[in-house]
Length: 125
Image (cartoon, rainbow, N blue to C red):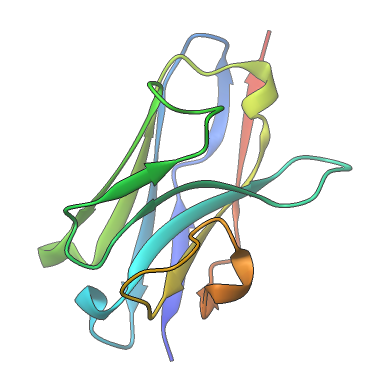
């Protein structure tokens, strides 16, 4: 079992920044690719970003490229999502997820084995 706990959400004005954290515990952190998804009210959950096991590769949804950065700190067993130039359409509950995969179609949430409880991000215009 892997436990994932997100933090760092909140209310921010458009153009502002937030950094989300996801602390992992229970199994070897480096065995998992770590991803972020989000779900806006009335919409399906969507892929945001993923960082592979090694940390060498990252992938992003087109909607966040150039604004969001995902990175992991192995010593802290934590994955981060730095979000800059936030827009009202980024408002959603953000979820952290872990996948015991070396490679995959990262946007497919079915390949993720563990999920956090989510943290709310609200961007005001």
